Image (cartoon, rainbow, N blue to C red; front, top):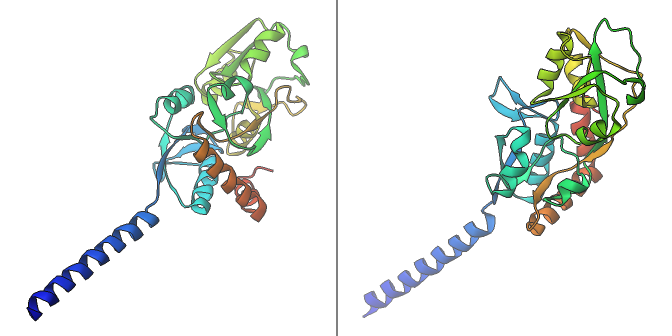
Length: 255
């Protein structure tokens, strides 16, 4: 009887220990979120050919927030035009890209607090002797702009241009400007500036041009994901207060 009693007690201790370990494991298990980031938005998001991973400002920021808030992220390369459809369909859980938090987009996705603000930049052929300061001085030109960006509606509404061509990427716009297929191109100013700073190019930024269409870049989640949005905003507030956000921007040459 004593032996059976001992075995019974041992079994009880084992079950209790197993339950405790299961609870502890569950408490420390991290939630993993899929993050969509574009492979062509350097320095905000881009494909690092050395690591074959998506890298950049927004990746560093979402990873810093995840570390603060105790969740894990898997960053997936997602084309710009597919970001919002991928989020709303559940293929990804978070958008971390150079995306403006516009009113029209806010009807479809939920945006975090502001991460960074900027406007559009203007590029022209390197040898073009022009100093446009606004779109009012560009009447009759053929220009290019990236698909899905917030710049398209205001540019179209201005009625100033002979034609507005829509491109999949900034690289395509820069190519056609350099080849003379279009007179000028519009794109995210810090992204254009970063790309032009990295090497010789047949295009240049028009420094005199003043951004007409500015906006706030933010992280996006699904409309019904209020808990995740609150978690991201809390983490964003922490890395902003600690100086980590400014350090990430400085690392990539963004002020």
